[in-house]
Image (cartoon, rainbow, N blue to C red; front, side, top):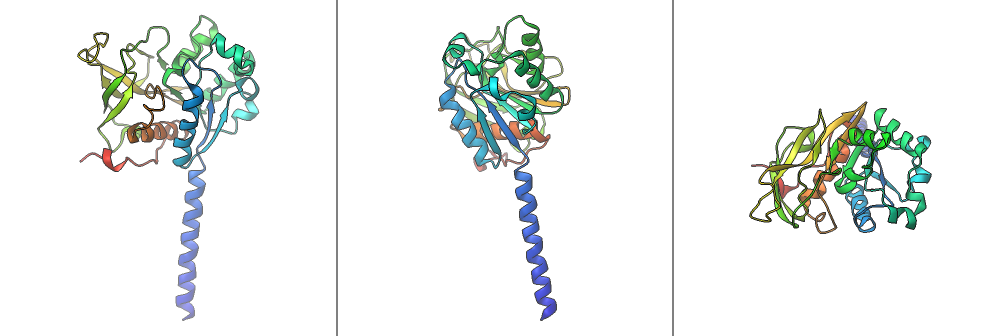
Length: 270
């Protein structure tokens, strides 16, 4: 009897240990969403980004005041940064603490170079697109994107398809993405790997290219893993299961080099 009780208690201990280890793993992804200024509706999209990542089991903080928070001691608390930001005159006037100082820019660059992951969400690839040395370095660091040459046709639904094997794309082939901007002519920097594309159908809009345009691609900057995700213009475009799980996986891979968010049942490949 004692032996059976001891075995049962040992089994319970293993279960609790497994649960504790799983909880610890789930706490490993610590995300800082950087926002506070953007040409798009950042006040609406930021809470959705946080909700998606929190539901995926990650610890998520938001800064709307990067001038105050993009400092080495703060950035050291996170293993991935999600950029929902673009530097604009209107944003600077409305929220002066959204403007990045030279010290903020240096801290951001050094964090990525030293191993902090980066996910560039939608239009944030044009966050800094001037001629300064930092703007040029940001283009390399962020793996390109919209920059100055990007454009899109009218918003519509389109199919998003896997183009390369990668942890982010494991277990699925494609999904129908909700009404969104289909980015075209994105800059893909040397060394980048395109993982996901969408066909830009001229029948939908004469502005469309007739090409399979990159939607998600990855690169490295120093020790940092970088992901560009061009999807998700607004809350409607962010509502589908495909966008949600793909965003979570982008963040997980940038943070750890692995993914753990499962493919939704409706998107699993046969």
